Structure formats: C-alpha cells, structure tokens
Image (cartoon, rainbow, N blue to C red; front, side, top):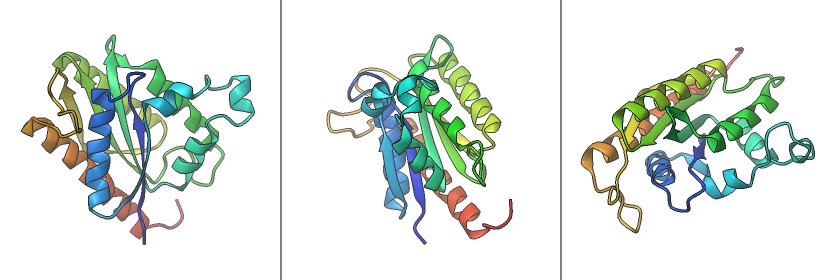
Length: 191
C-alpha cells in the first residue's frame, strides 16, 4: 500500500529556510517509501484568498484534492509576529473545503509540524499555533514538532541542512508523520 504525504509550507521567498526545512522532512518520509507531494511557497503565493471569487471558481482545488487523498500531512510555517504567516494560514483555510467529506478536514491523518523563525520564542509560539489549528481540523499532530531557529548558512546552496540538531528534528518529523500515516492506513475502518 502506498502512503501519500502532502507537504504544505514556505514563504514568498524562493528557497526560503521554511521551504527547505519542509522539503528535508518530506524527503525523509519519501526515503522510507511514502509518495510525497509538495505545495511550496510558489504555489501558496499564487493561491487566492480563501472564499474569494477565484476560490469559488476552483482555485486551490489541486491542494484540496491532494489533502483529501493523503494519509499524512507535513506543514511548515515561518514565525511572523508570534504566529504563522498569512500565506500558510490561507492555505490551511482551504481545508475547510473538506468539511463535509466522510473523513472531514484532517481526520484520520497524522500531521507533522515545522516552525521556523529567527528566535526560539517565535518558533515555540508558531508551533503551538500550528498544533491548535491541526487539533481544530481533527488532525493528529506527531509527538515531535520541529522548532528550527533560522540563520544564514543553516542550509547549503544545494539544500543540505548543515546543523545536526535541525536535521535530526526534521528527519524525525518526516519519519513520525509516515509512521502515523501507516498506522492510520492499517487501522482504516469506521471513524
């Protein structure tokens, strides 16, 4: 059985630390056999505001359908003013389109969370916000949530994480979301 993981996150800046962190966690899940689809900053930047006319005409449908079919989700958000960015929040708002599904929102899905920021306090408040959102969407956050303190040089130009602590956290989140997704898929039945 193929396990499908959807990775959502990034910023408007190409190659952002947030998106690199997301891709590292996604690669970890992929290396262990998951099929991973990434919706990074470029995709999120193009999404219309949730509920707008463009949304009503189908904008964001690819993201919604991917999450609908997913067994697990990875979410990475930068810490902006003590919480998640509007870019990531807008993408998560699109999950409202799953509200009337047989498996609504993130129900029955493991969700790995990654918070990035320049300071430790911002990473923690961002992670707490992500956990609250995932709980509200009926998802199952993984035990490990990565809090990545960003700085110039954390990632090499080719995307390699140069800090052992950060790399370990990201790989663990990727592995845990896959393990959780496998557990849910193996126990699938009436919700």
